[in-house]
Length: 301
Ligand SMILES: Nc1nc2c(c(=O)[nH]1)N[C@H]1C(S)=C(S)[C@@H](COP(=O)(O)O)O[C@H]1N2
Ligand SMILES: [Mo]
Image 1 (cartoon, rainbow, N blue to C red):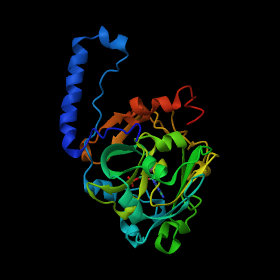
Image 2 (image 1 turned 135 degrees about the horizontal axis):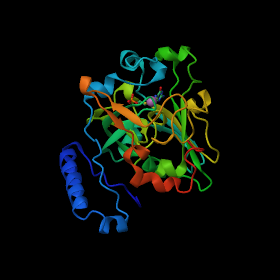
Image 3 (image 1 turned 90 degrees about the vertical axis):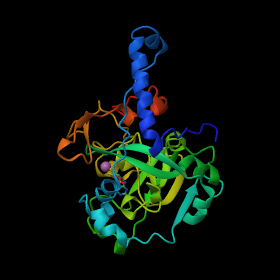
Image 4 (image 1 turned 45 degrees about the horizontal axis):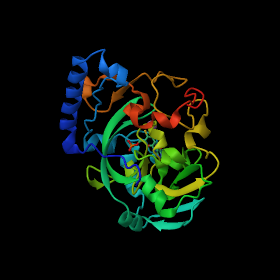
């Protein structure tokens, strides 16, 4: 890949990485006001990359196909059949078809990516995903030059999904990305957590993860990926366009119409859970801000 993102973080690296950030802070303090500002270097932020534990990640979920309670996905998603699993990849691609999940896995490089996850509801987690870059899958099928967007669709199987009898959203759950967002090296299809197969409640056998966007963009249990030249409809935008835009980049300065997005609370931590400031692009500003250069992030929220 031309611009493969260096997976700088694995579970073993989190502590050394923190030490590195602290060193950067010390260095920054030592030359305050002189070279760094001129070089345009931002002060180092100690990003919280301490992974949540398995229990937290797999029992506090949003997967409305199984119910709207945070515990419903774990309670009910066991019913979902994930083998065999085929993903239809179609639209503006050179090699459209129904791709078997096991064949996809044989061709992809699985990496560990420790990412922050920020739900629009203001809770957050850190998840050690395993997965592959979406760009690699798109390269496998060959994206045609006229494609501009990627549309995604979740499995819809009412007899295995007790939540879909309620018309909370318009099933199937659908999502979409601009092609450059989809090809960005931070964008992955996750197939595991903590080195284990991804549990059904987290979106087995493969789900999108776009760490700089609100969690609802990270669509679970994907069965169809369509390359298109039109901005695709998205589930939460259809529900309320005013509240949920197409872009949905994490942004502490653009409030949800019904609540501030300036702060968040990490799941876990019990009584001591702290409200912490939300970061622009969820802390991935250096990596992704250039995708939105010159865009009005309020209008295109
Ligand atoms: N198909 C589908 N995908 C979905 C959802 C959903 O209800 N259905 N919920 C989204 C929301 S709101 C969030 S915050 C994340 C939660 O992912 P997690 O349960 O793995 O933490 O999944 C997203 N993907
Ligand atoms: Mo969410």
